Amino acid sequence: MLKRITENKAFFPILLIVIFSIISAFSLFMIGDDYLWYYSVEESKLEGWSAPNGRLFSNWITIVLVRSTSFRIIFVTVTLFLFIYFIGKLIDFQKAAFNLKYYFGLILLIMIPSATYRETIHWISGFPNYVFSMVIIVFYLLFIFKCCFDNYIPQKPIAIFFLLIGLVGGLCVEHITIYNVVLSIALFIIVLKSKKNCILHSFFFMFGTMIACFLMFNNGVYSGIFSGADIVGGRSLKLDFFDIMQSAFSYVAVHYSKDYWIASVIISICFTLLLFGKFNGINKPKYLKLTLTVCWLYSGYSVFTSCFSNFRPLNAAMRIVAIETAFSFIYIVSIVYLINVFLDKNGRMRSYIYIISSLLVTLPFILVSPVTPRCFFANYVFWMLLCGEMIFSVINMKKPERVLSLLDRAVGTVSIAFVFAMSLVSLTNRCFDDVRYRYIREQLESGEKSIKIILLPYSEYSLDDLDNGLFTNREHVGNYYFSEYSILYHDIEPSKDKEYIEIPISTYDYYMEKES
Image 1 (cartoon, one colour):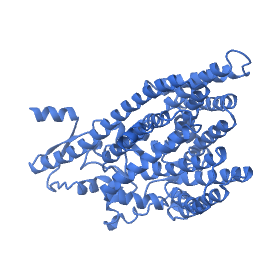
Image 2: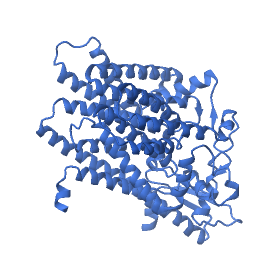
Image 3: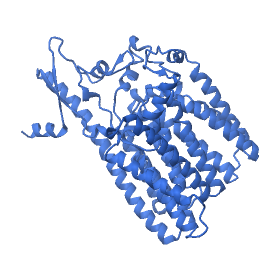
């Protein structure tokens, strides 16, 4: 039995995803908003925090996640596994190569910008809002594509399941709620026109998203946001034309595609390989070379500005931003053109859905404030899917067994290295979070006045509550301050008669002190 399982081609990539998901779940620890969610069911002064918005499902599940470690490990493990599994299924929809889809899914996820990764995968409060909601979307897209492209015939009784996931998926975060309604209507029209066998299922999903949208925005907190009087999260709506343009140019446009530089590089490589594989120097479309050049120029620019240095300090800030925005627009137009040139009808449809979706989940942020890196997680997911579509279009063009075997081993090895590196980062931060609070308690018990606070070693991948101190930390959301609840949660009892001096130290300094 065991031999049969290990000989299965899917065994090793699936095992790798399971290991990655379990380690990610075990690595989560309490940060920022998590403390407020934990005490929202106990502290009367946190009554407003217990229902700060219309995210009815994700609010409830977040409270359970912060209060139950065992449930958190199970929920995060299962959700993250399903997310990567469904991503793999979607990016290799044509079933060109079995193992590669899961390896690429892992790599593309780990390669999203670290600021977004730490606020979604590595944050308890962010995980159900941003990751779980995308699991619903990716699953629904996979279902619709199977019905449209593989003529899959689903059983009618399971249509009620799509009502439930449409409802639950729409009660996680606002921009996904709006996107779900738009997506469900568009796909229902497509299914209706093509007379596929999932009309009932797509209708129920659409109905569920509409109910969710009503429940979400019927919450009274949004009237405060619209009027600029939100006391919970300090959120506001920008309706002034100049404010909208400022937000669009200075943040949204430049982060839409530039930060996820691996996507632009992969897409450019794939288009180049498709060029040599399909045209071979003859009968090239008119704008092929121009658009491909744009893709490579944008790739080089995104790599340089993301990995080395930004150009903004070199010139008037808004001038550079305007150029970047125009460059991004030309880049997207070039991708749309090249997709039309290289991909078949079904591939074009999937790719255009991904591009339009990336725009739809990003555009709301030109109207709202504040905008944080986690807001772009859904956008990066659709870029992941577009990358996968390009990769497997190349593989599907010519797929000799020997090349596939070598590619499988190479990409598998890279994915193992990525999983190992990210697991090391995650577990190290988790370990040091325990150590540093224990160290603070030891210093207080010994009567120290100068308190040394250990900073997280990999703060790029975890939010750090203590980088601005502990007792003097004034970080907050609305009228709620994190520090008083983090002190309470970690059983830290400072003396009321002492004024403490807080000294941040690196992990290296801590171990040097221990050795001496």
